[in-house]
Length: 487
Image (tube, rainbow, N blue to C red):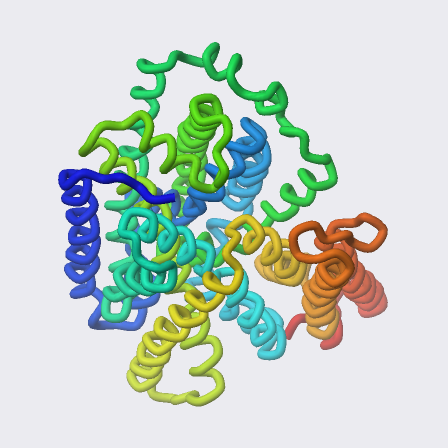
C-alpha cells in the first residue's frame, strides 16, 4: 500500500522529524554530568513528565492495534486494554513506591542486590528480549516505506537512526523530552480523524450496521484460552523495564504511584480513540487486503491535506516514543548489566560512571543493528509481541516481583531454577508447536498455549523454595539460615 500525500502533508511530517531531533539534542545538555543524569534523568521526573513519557512509551504498537481492531472489533480493548489497566494499577499500588525507594538503575540491578550475580545475569538476558524495539522498528519502517516508496530496509534504517541519534549523548533526558512532545502529537493525531469519520459517515449506528456482529462482542470470536493467554501476557506490565526505569527516575514515590494511575486514565481514553478508529476503518473499507494498514487506509479515504499529515505524525509519534525508550533500556542493559559486569569493575566511581556511559552508547548501536535484523526477518508485529511475551514473561515475573517483598524471598538456587525453567519450558513448548505445523498456525502440545507450562514450572520451583524457607525458619526458631535467605 502506498500513501498519497500532498506537499503540505510532507511539510507537516518533515516538521515533526525536525522537532524530535531538535528536542532530543537540546535535552542532551543535561546528561553530561553524573551517570544518574544519563541513566535516570537525575531522578527528577515530575508528575506531568512522568505521565507523558510513560503513556507514550507504553503505547507504541499502533499498527498492531489497528490490525486487531479491524479484524476483531472492540475485543481489541478487552484484550489489549483491560488486562493492562489491571496490572498497571497493581504496579502503582504495590510496586511503584518500592521501586522508587530502591534507587537503582535497571531490573538486573535489583536481581543482583537480592539474588546475586547468576540470577542478575539471567535477568539481563531475559530483559534484552523483553525490551527489544524490533516491533516498533518494523512499524515505523512500514509507515515510512508507505509514504516514501523506499524499500523496507532503507525505511527501517532511516527511521531507526533518526529515532535514536540523540540518545547517544542525551540518554534518558533526551528520551523523556521527546516522549513529552510525542505524547501531545499521538492524541492530536487520533483526535483529528474521529470527527471526520463521525460527520461524514455517522455515529455508532453506522458502525453497528456495517461491521460483522462479532466485532461488537468482547471476544471478537477468539477462544477464551487465547484471550486468557493475552491476560497473562499483560502481567508483563509488572516486569516491564520502562515502568521500573520511570519509577527509578521519578522525583518521589508518590509521583511514581500517582503517575501510573493517571496514565491508566490516558490509556483508557487513547484505547477508545484507536478502537473507534479501527471500527470506522472496517465499516468504511470492509475488504481491506492488509488489515495492519487499516489506519493509513482510512486516513486516505476521509482526511484532507494537512490533516492527513497530522494523522500520520500521530501514528509516527506513537511508535517512535516506544522505539526510543526501548532502545535506550536495551542499550543500558547491554552496557551496564552485561559489558560493564564482564569487562570492568573499577573501584573509582568516576571511572565506573564513564565506562557505564561508554558501554551503554555502544549498546545503542548494537540494539539498533539487532532490531533492524529482527524487523526484516519477522515482519509481523503481533507475532513478535506474542512470542516474546509468552516465552520470557514466565522467567522474570516471580523472581522480579518477589524481590521487592522481603517476606516472599526464597533461596538463590530456587529462584534461579524458577527463572530458568520458566522461560525455557515456554520456549520449548512454543518451538514444538512451530515445528509441528509452522509459524502461522502452530499446534501446541495438548492444545495448551506455551505461557502456561512456563508459569507452572516457575511457580513450582518458587513454591519449593518457599516451603523450604518456611521449614527452615520453623526449625531455626524463625531466624532462617543461609540456604533460605537470598543473600
